[in-house]
Length: 219
Image (cartoon, rainbow, N blue to C red):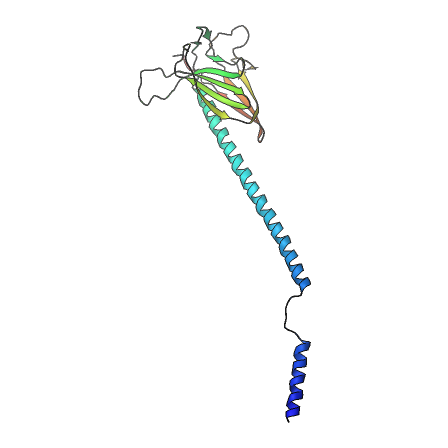
């Protein structure tokens, strides 16, 4: 009886030895690690692409916001333009609007509607200059309309990374001009009907904006 039980135990151990416990071989582990590595690389690449896309969208939204602010400012200045000539620092009379493209200056104009929340004793008129230099579009304004020799402007950079800026002026005969005033009337004070500005940007290409001028009575 004891021998029979011993033979049964040996057969049981033999069956267990022929069927080892489940597990992974070294080759299977290496294959699994390789697959996990590939999946990690793909996931990291997708995450990086997603982050780059998000950064690009954020940058474009920021540029679009600056463009909207610029066009709002430009439109407000032109819609408030008035037919009022000034005298510069040398005492020379300058036209109400000057778009002769002298140096970096693109457009010089007189506008009204300047805010005066403190009710100071000063004119509502203001002299504005738009300049383009070193890929930047700048707006300058003076506190006094007729410029004193020591007067300095307040300057603000509205746009940068510009490739170019072009202006056109629509006269009373509905003709487009590339400079204002035109011809021999360089000190005239008549304003154009409208101005078209074209901005050339690296990210957005060419953007056009047409602004009508109300031709207000000089003050």
